[in-house]
Amino acid sequence: MTAESDLQHALSLLRSGQAKAAFKQSKAAMRTYGGAAVFPNLAGMALCTMGKHRDGIDYFQKALKIDPGFVDARRNLAQTLILLGKSDLACTVLERLVRDVPEDADGWYLLAQAQMKRGGTDAAETAVTRSIELNARQARAFNLRALIRDRAGRMAEALDDYQTALRLNPDDVDTLTNISLPLARQGRTAEAMDSVRRAVALAPGHVGARLRLAAQLVEMGETAEAITELHAVLERAPDQADAIEQLAQLQSADENAALLPQARAELKKLHGKSPARASLNFALARIADQAGERESAARYLAEANRTMAELMPYDPTADSALHDRIMARFKSVTGAAASGAEEAPMPIFVVGLPRSGTTLVEAILGAHPNVQPLGERAAAGILLGPIIEADGPFGADQIAAFVAGDLSMLPDLSEGTTAYVDKMPENYRLIGFLKTAYPTCRVINLRRDPRDVALSNWRAHFSGSALSYAYDLAGMAHHFNRYARIMTHWHRVFPDQILDLKYEELVADVEAASKALAAHCGLDWVPAMARPDLTAEQVLTLSATQLRQPVHSRSVGGWRKHADTLAPFVQGLDPALWPDLA
Image (cartoon, rainbow, N blue to C red):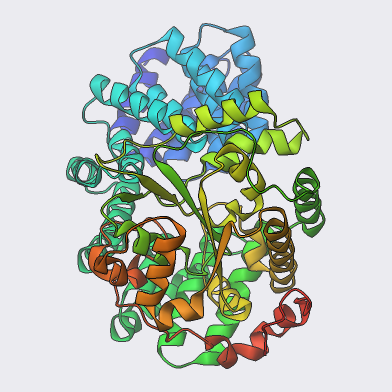
């Protein structure tokens, strides 16, 4: 036997799925060929294949100790660090790699992955673009750049990259899965569904593809099929906490009774704080609530939110400073902005606290034949964030740049559209900028009993970190107070230009409320606006299931049954800012 034959034997074992045997073969070769870095590197690969990533790191480091210039071992070490969430360490390894081997396209690709994981969007895009320049035939690199650009709100560029990736590899399952969401956001629902269904057909065991298909089905109101897909995920990955949580939210009490043992069993396996642990506790809270076990539900919810609060802590000081900086920019009454865009079509901004009814209002407006609902657009926050953070100017040049950037992020609008709805709730902080850039835009502020809003938030598991305050009752009260204070400020700065709509009045008489909305937006009222449940086609928020029911008031006052749980929140509300509370 020679080193080369032993290497080929170990590689053959690994490629055929015999990772344990490949590890043993590599270990034996390490004893025979102590100076060959390739064998500890292969042993590390075998361990990672077996899911033993931390042990794999030791072997990659052994390989690099033998040969510090061993590129494969450096890549493998970095990739494993990324998988373990150690993105800073991975960046250190990869920055050295691309410095020593600047033509290594794979190294630049992995560096982009690591930088994206730690939030460095610009640096990640630079790295992946360099990878593409070195090797323009990598579908995965275009897919990664598309993800980065989509996260930055540059949907058109993201779609171009996804489509390039698919031209290079029409059967790339990750790209087919990832492109479905931006297609759905553009209203291209048939294409979105076709794409993710193709991904599942190509790789039935791909958990991410099936989860995305289930989400798309929920967005389209196809709940029964979504449940089927989630069960298919759990057949292949019984520990998939996201699938368990989504099933618990969709299924009946009887169906969830069958899910309960699995949710409990998977929770017992988890140690420490993790998103998966939070997901399982949210699922168990839902199941307990359906079974009428209120105390158990409250305990599970408290644990779920405690976990998320530790993973994504809320900073009330920074939140207050942000609101104060924004209000300081807009101090005087401005009947109309002096400069801005001539809107065609006109933006309608629906704002408020999350879970206050913004999705319902969007659906009412979207039932009008000339109004296109666009969901929660991140464009305004992305474009204005750097200006706010740097306390930079917002004069004529900045306004023009903002409007151009915002318009470039719009999806293709249907023919005949005269207005579109942007229902990002937390755009309430940006009203001064929006009214300056779009002088004739309409702003609708949803006001709902903050105790009902808090209860709904406490039960929700949001994506991303923007709503970290929702996992802490005292933090939620602080943020709600800041919302009430800045909305008072905007009414003073822009008198008679913001419609306050009470959720309780909306659900009590949807026809009257829809007529008030039409009047505020300069629209001719149409009867379809009073039945949003009949016209909603796709809903990209947590309200997808609720919106397809006729408008009702069952949740009004629901907080009273949970007064003990919500006590820290209620005590933190400023009565001067919430005078309507009984």
